[in-house]
Length: 248
Image 1 (tube, helix red, strand yellow):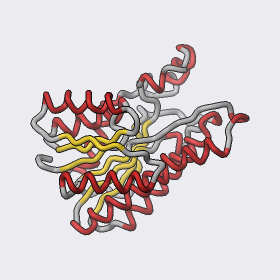
Image 2 (cartoon, rainbow, N blue to C red):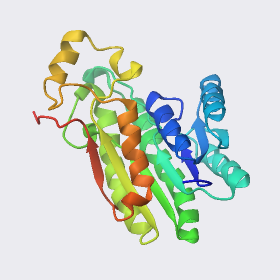
Image 3 (cartoon, rainbow, N blue to C red):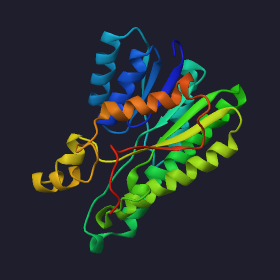
Image 4 (spheres, rainbow, N blue to C red):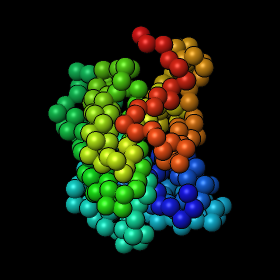
């Protein structure tokens, strides 16, 4: 991947940082997107540049805003002239009691998770198609397949929608651009675990064949694989990364 360019959205999340490090260690130049966490983005940028001989470019954008997304993409292409890999990792999850869910919750979640991903993928995907090369990876979730939580109903709907989006993008950009989705199950991140008690975590781990939650690095490894030459014949696919999980 030497001299290739990868744009990663939501790079300040634990999974986003792990993906960034994985691509960096393989010699890929990085464009790291953030929304509000500028200092965290700068810290990740500095850490990666100190360890790896690559270029790291930071871009800010509000994925609820089409204008902001267009500006970000313009900045990216001015900096590098091309994007070889797009990793749509950014997402929001506004958990609350089912009875308290509002239209505003739904619209905000869908705006960021689905519409933002669509707008960015279209802008970058069109360029990839013109160049006759590119890989797009969308971070979905097992929440969008068969793991449902009413308190996350808007998030679950968005992650299911991302799978449909992936299928459509793979048709639109064939035969030059591979488009796939990764569907993680439980992942051990501070954000994911902070509101869960130990008893609930243990009960969820018992449903997993490997009896543990995944790690951000394990998700990053699959994302990287889908952008590598080794996955050249994988397209229009959803890859579960959940340790093997009982349904029900």
